[in-house]
Length: 103
Image 1 (cartoon, helix red, strand yellow):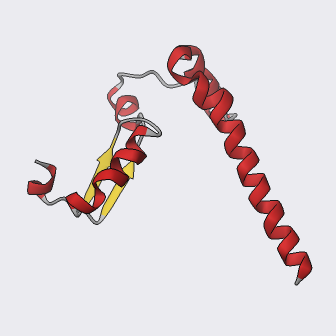
Image 2 (cartoon, rainbow, N blue to C red):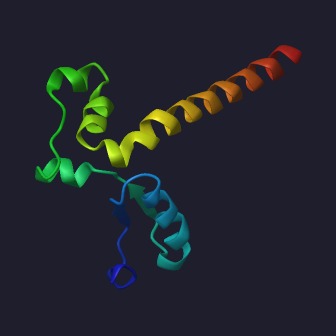
């Protein structure tokens, strides 16, 4: 159905990392110019999933609100995945800084 409709943009809302893996698995077969993983955006807009209070959104704590709402599903992502990601980013930044200092 997706291929037959020939969209220019495809929004995939399966949650991370499932949506990114799905996009990667099917992007060539579907031949859609742009595919975007939107996570829970549709659930937020439709009111299925409650958003954090405004003060938590504004102070960068919406992730914590979501963790409290769905701890079984989200604990690995926020408590293990995010720190690993941050460490990988810092490692890459340090590599670049070291390479620049050698030039």
